[in-house]
Image (cartoon, rainbow, N blue to C red; front, side, top):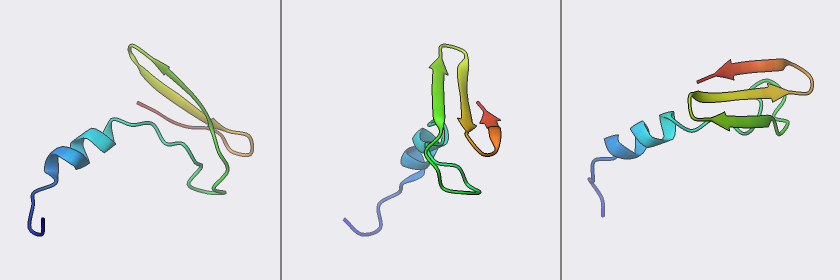
Length: 50
């Protein structure tokens, strides 16, 4: 349906950890815990934590 509001989708995606490095596009090692997540790239190390 054209014209639907996708704010809820965007908020939901913001909670997801990244799966691929933004610099080299390699798949990252992701660990999800009850308090958040960590993501690490082989080349660039930890690139973020939520």
